[in-house]
View 1 (cartoon, rainbow, N blue to C red):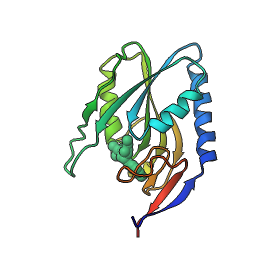
View 2: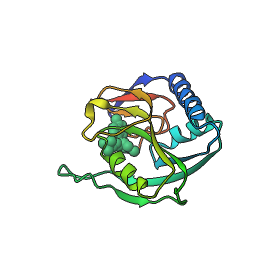
View 3: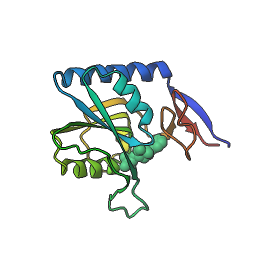
View 4: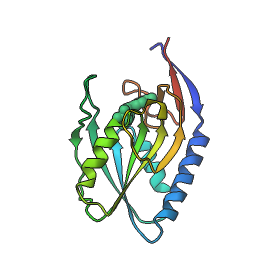
Length: 173
Ligand code: IMP
Ligand code: MG
């Protein structure tokens, strides 16, 4: 219980940026529909907030994956909960909370491409580019942040702090 949380991005800043991303997506997909795939659990807050800011028709689905394990990782990701709906022919936007090494998303995007969506793009609330191990094309980024462990707006530390309305850095002491 020793950790303290220092505010990195205030609630207003986060919401304003998500609104901008929603407006950008609405323009990019004018006349089309988008199918948001929310990666549980971290992206729940981002995905719902973003969906509210998109003005073209939106459908939503959820997927839960386990992170790669150990240090000798193959990058393989285990699907804990697969999608409920087919994505063939749909304009998919995968929504993540944060991209760190990029391993999870790299694996996931390749797997989803095999299901023949009409298009597939990636949107993340946060990006830690300094930590990237695998190259991933990210189409919509909320904020690039330094290599620090953050929580809030869906992100957890040991399943805690997801409900913080702002993004904070965990200060371990
Ligand atoms: P990666 O990009 O495959 O390394 O995995 C990213 C995942 O690691 C995210 O979806 C988060 O669940 C988790 N993660 C990475 N950095 C942080 C952080 O600063 N706070 C909370 N979770 C993080
Ligand atoms: Mg995640």
